[in-house]
Length: 134
Image (tube, rainbow, N blue to C red):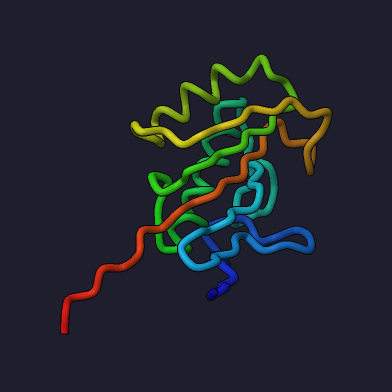
């Protein structure tokens, strides 16, 4: 078993006792991302669409730093302070993912860090590297 801590400046730095992601062999566990702008570490300005988009952009940055992409995500958890926003998450998710879609859960929560309206975490599986025969 190999374990690697993933860190990138293209996503918000961890604001607590956690890593942006942890890779164990071919599986990557991506920590929750809220709509923080990496450069300012503040919640993105704008409407809820901007928040959802920023979260997907943050997840994408961590996925890429892990050696994969959003298409490698096999499980996505979406946490919302208002489940009425779920159709908007679904719509925007369609711009970032193609079929076959990952497994997903949408969970209504009372509050999220920094008063964000949305947070997402994910599990990603990376295909083993194929090496030419020697």
